[in-house]
Amino acid sequence: MVDLIAAIPPANTVIVAVVGVLILRAVHEIRRGNVDRHKQLMIAATALFSLFLALYLVRMFLHGPTSFAAQNPTAPGWASTFYYAFLGTHMVLAVATIVLIPFVYLRAMRSHWTEHRQLATKVAPMWLVSIVMGIAVYFLLFQVW
Ligand code: HEM
Image (tube, rainbow, N blue to C red; front, top):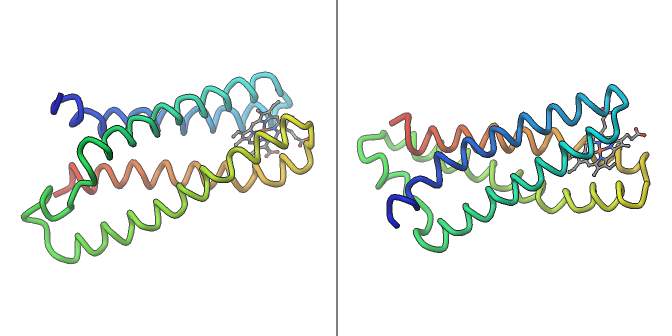
């Protein structure tokens, strides 16, 4: 059980990397005018992202947050300060993205394409940046020090 919980952070890092690739592909497809493919890829990205969130919440519930100092006892003090500032920025961006994603879908479901495009062109980059930062958080916490 403990091993399964420990496997969640690396598994989730791979999952969000795939989500990032799906978002990039989906944006590429809509730019080529391929609505069906864009829709399929965004739904796949959202489904996989939901799996990531579920696993993240399972780990938070069973294990709690990981202390940077406990995980990296030899790391210098500035590394911990940098890590928590970076983590905080990532979390604010990730929460904002998660709140906005349903509105992007609502606009698509109502065929409000101009509004969909306006919001989605902000949400897709936010989503991608939060994914890249999330992957960096994994490496800072578990691999660098
Ligand atoms: C979270 C999910 C989604 C995100 C992040 C997203 C993202 C985007 C982005 C960034 C664009 C603008 C591309 C550009 O011109 O540079 C766009 C346009 C578009 N999306 Fe989505 N999309 C999502 C879901 C959907 C769904 C479910 C549909 C359903 C068919 C859809 C249909 C369209 C269409 C038709 C356009 C072109 C709108 C226009 O300019 O007339 N999208 N989307």
